Length: 246
Image (cartoon, rainbow, N blue to C red):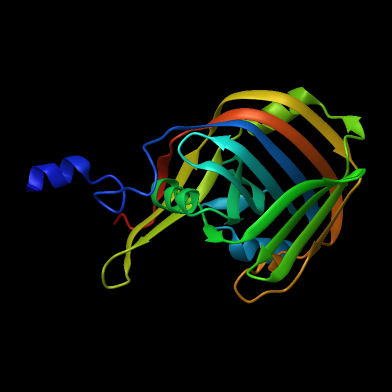
């Protein structure tokens, strides 16, 4: 293989058998259970990277089931998303993610900088309750519940929320473990088709874990539960801040 062939084909690892195909990626029947809660503002300030600023004291804990995604197949993920502002404009910062499939872990981290780690999230219906759970190894770290489709949500408001910019902190090490890439990345959800949106009573429990520290943003008050059914495309990102630029 020549140097020019390496440069032509070197877009993902491993070189001769990439862990995922090129994006963008389309998701069909993507299902969200989102539980919003108030937390400690000092704890929020400690994890949101400047120049982002927390927009209040709310965190969204998300459980997401993806039965059909181009390139990544079927998997489930869970994590915390924080409403923020960047230079006065509203958006959300993806703080933590845990999922059960290696291809989207590799692709999410390498392309955009999603903070993905291996976990065991689940989303399922238990009689009249929509349930989301997250295990790290064999240890339970989160349980969320919501009344199943109690009332219709405002679809226009949901679509506005899904159209907001999303921010990620992309970190890639150099061979000496110093940062080679340290950037704030923006991405958006595109071609969104909202198939249904429901609200209902919700509850959330977070449990302390050394390597899955979701409880560092403690639940002080649950403020709402949202259940969504969507088709959407995960748009490719752009760099909005480079921490290493001199």
